[in-house]
Length: 115
Image (cartoon, rainbow, N blue to C red; front, side, top):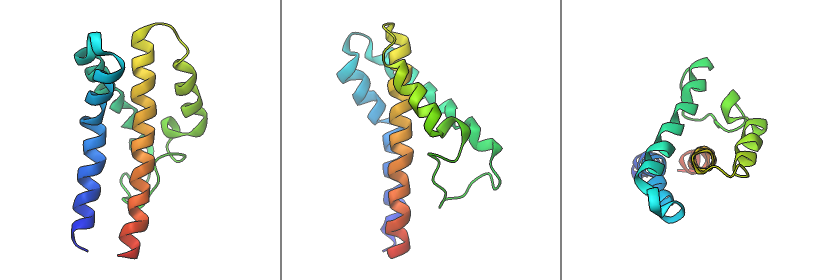
């Protein structure tokens, strides 16, 4: 199944870049373009990947491994949803969706191993 790695790549990066635009439009319609930009900026959370050895491992689950992808960090991101200021909530939605995207990417590992 040669198409699986390509499907994984398209799904992962589509969810990282396109889906936040849809979320921004749905949740923050009055300022969706700014919200989309903020959500894209939350990808800076991936800076913690620079601490890993090896730097990139396609079979590694980011969630629970990297410091900013840890479960305590995710709990903090969820708590940020309670802050009444819209920019903080936008950051929280972006970070939580980022974690969801990284988690679903790990499901592809199982598909690719079974192929």
